[in-house]
Image 1 (tube, rainbow, N blue to C red):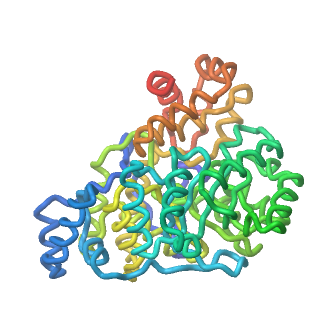
Image 2 (tube, rainbow, N blue to C red):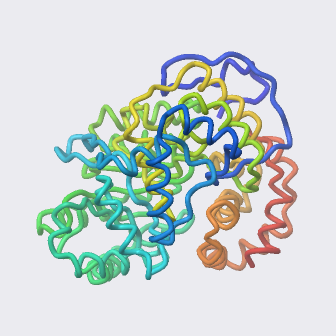
Length: 452
């Protein structure tokens, strides 16, 4: 990660292959992943200019009948797409020969009562890549019940699931992976999985062991999985570079968002994985932070009113402008959010230089509440205390995703001796080295208060 002391022009937006002009950093701001944005007057002006009053009414009526809560800043494209009957486009997944929807339903957090409505709406809009995990709050079970009730749907869906979080620096145990895989098949009520991540959230490439990749090859030969891969949340660029040199990897899910490719390791990793023909899927595509506050998102939204986007849609469009990403797996809780993401994916308008400038300023204003996943830097300052990066991720799940139960469950898995060292650690050096200038010590303390 580049030093924050460098000129702002060093913040390179590789998605569009150009440098963005230098700006001053505004410290002490936070960010939100909410759809909050346009005030009512500006929103109605945008809607009126697009001539979509009747479409908005139809969208609102549908939201009322489905129980979905429309995003506050839902803009013109959302309502228009919701009623258009259009389909989210598809892209090739590396050299697999398969095309998948550029938006994936990630981490299905619908209530079980509303799960089927959400999955049906995804199908309507062409969101046919469904991404779940053994640890995603009933996601596998919900999808399994839906597929069992709709026998013709399985052939239309590209289904991805994952093993449980491997844990920091642990190596996969094949017997555990086998057991989890068989449990996933039962919950999903299917006879095969399209993409199986045999290791979830790797922290180092050594976790992609020969035995694990041989296990994946065996499952492919038996027709139990079509493609084998992994996911990674931290040290992403380094992990991608290493994985590009390995056999048996068909696709990977990598933490990436509109600001991620300013990191040279990440840029090199994306290049390497693409050249290797390995399919690349974005996770954490919205670049969500740890202390949500709608002020910066609202300000960002104002910069997109001329195109009809809100801040949420703009961040997704920015990621999808990089065609090396086959898809972005997005956690969508409501039908309104599904329609918002579909609108961003279907809309063909390109972001302008002014819009990229707004994204740059937003990234600078919110950087000290955004963990970039470069845990190796924390580790260099805290050689005897791992897990600070994990703490940042769990706070993000709790505060910005609203997934408190998952955050607490993951926090509880931190070994007792690691938690003890974290409580006693001096984070001064880690904070000094943090490229984002995050108040690591304060946030770790807050995590112990709220997640323990």
